[in-house]
Image (tube, rainbow, N blue to C red):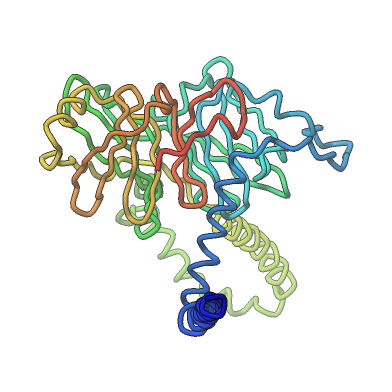
Length: 377
């Protein structure tokens, strides 16, 4: 009986070992499967990092001209917009106080601070969208259609002259900001006042054509004075020929003085060519979205839709209605919109952003903290 148990035990053990070896040889030795396993573990690590507690601030290298941003995380409050850039591995934050922050990817240090002009006629409305289109170029838009351009110059973020988006009407209720790289156009969401209609508004940058100057009088028909002058010049040709030898020096001096203005004008033309043409941002098109595919329950909530945020992922645009706890998915090519219910923990969120291909909602805008951002996937 003891020998029989031992036989069964050893046979089972041998089968397990052989099975493990065969499993490794035929399954885990495949490179594609290994990549998938590695990708799964990497995503687990990323999700875990979002839930970990913040580390102590990293000491910054001091510079006489630089603002000390070591403890500036405490200054970030009343967040309006957040954008995470995979390109530079940092968060970009806009606040209600018109402050622009670049925060390190681990959320422990402010890399840069920019105070936007926000007084008098320059006073800004609420920010409703932000987008980085290049690693040194960021656009933001306000509720009244003011476009803010922020560029990195010699390691610092600076603001460029603001421009009002032309073509918007008073009934437009715009929010969110995206970028179509194929057409190099910005786009926003729009909900027409007192209607259930939702639109994608595409905005493009155009060169301002210079005004055409009036025709010069010199192009008009010759006057009597011109005719007289021409006859006088023709009659004096013979005497001019006789005095060529005596006027050589005078002629060369005159030529030199004539060349100087020509050179100056050429330099001015070269400077004008170097200057970038003036541009303006104008509404290019309105694309109405069809909600015919929605279920009856989502359609009912959509009639009271108040959208926040706008993120793009894999050819789709996502918008959150936190009051109704619905995440809407938009297909720009088919111009359709559909919605699905999301967890109540995103209730009353103020915006969204995309990080590591995961959508996050801003649920606690009072402070900047990674715990204030909740995944809605």
